[in-house]
Length: 453
Image (cartoon, rainbow, N blue to C red):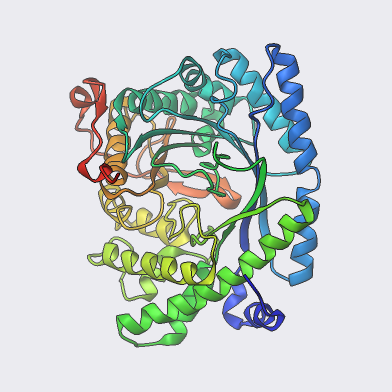
C-alpha cells in the first residue's frame, strides 16, 4: 500500500484527532521451538527468545511516536498459546512458565504479555487440562500475564465441559486476587471463535499459522468519531454513516503507516491492523458517548443495538477500504469499565446485563470487563459464558466473556483498577440457575452454517 506524506500529515493535523492514539502495537512471537524436556532449559529458551525480539520494542514504538506526533498508548507481546508447545508439562510447571513470561515482559518494559492460552473447542489434551487448572494461580502470582481459552467455534460447536471449567477458574481467580478487587479476572478471557492475530489484551495470542514474529496494531479513536458526529449535526443515518466511514478511513491509514514503520525497525513482517474502536475511561473517548451523540438518550435505550450495529458496520467498511491487511476483531469494543459512557449507564441502571448481551450480537467481542456480585455462582457464570458463546457460534463471529465476580462485593458497589482498566460498577445478575443444562456436559453441536465446504 502506498501512502502520500501529505495524507498522513493531514490526518494528524485534523482537529477531530484530539483524542486519537494508536492503542497498541503488539509483537507476536512464536515459542514453538522453545520446548525442552527440562523445565529450567525451557524457561531459559522462552526468556531468551522474548528478549531477542522484544528488547527494543518499546524504543522502536517511541521513535515512531515521536516521528509522527501520534501517541502509541501500549506496547505489548503475544506468544504461541502456551498449552500447545508445552503440552507435556503439569499445572505447577505451567505456573513457572507464567512467571518467566512475567519476568521477560518486565525486562522489555511492556505492560502485558498475552498467550497463556489453550484452544479446547473440540476437546482437551492433557496439557490443555493442566494449563486450565493452573490459570488462577498463574494470574494471581504474576502482574503482566494475560490468559485466554477458546471453548467454542462455529466449526466445532461449544465445549460445555470447558465452559464449566472456565467458570470455576474465574471464581477461583477472583478469590485468589480478592485483595486487589479480583483483578486477576480482568486478565482472563473466555472465547468463542478466537482469532489468531488479535493485538488487544487480554485475549491476544500468536496463532499457530502466524510467522516466527510479526507486528500487529490496534487503532483507537472513539473521540475522533464522536467529534465528527457532533460536527455533522442533524443529518440522516445514511449521511451519518458516511461521516463515520470517512474519519475511520483516515485514522486507519495513519495507524497502519505507523505500525509498518515499527515493523520495519524490528525487521519483521507487518501483520494486520485491527480497526476496532477501543475506548478508555477518559472523558470524550467513549463508545457510549458516540451512541448518545447518534441520538440515544443513554446507552440501553430502545434503539441502542441498532445504533451500535450501524456504527460497527461503518467502521468495518471504512477499514476494509483503507487497508489490505485488516484482521483481529475489528469493530467497536464495549468494555463496561473502560468506557465512561458505559460506566455511567450501568451506574444509573439504564444498561442491564441482558441489554449488554444483545448489543454484543452486533459488535466486536462480547461481555467485556463486566463486574458482577462476588457471590455469583460458577453455574450462573457458566450460563453467561454459554449464552455469549452461542451468539458467536450462530453468527460465525468472535465473542468473549471477561467477567469479574468481585469477591465480597455486591450491586451498588464497584471495582476500581485505575488506568486503562478503569472502574466497573457491579451489575445485577439474575439468580435463576441453568446448572442442570450446563451440567449435562459434552458439546453443543456445530450449527448448520458450519457446513461451508
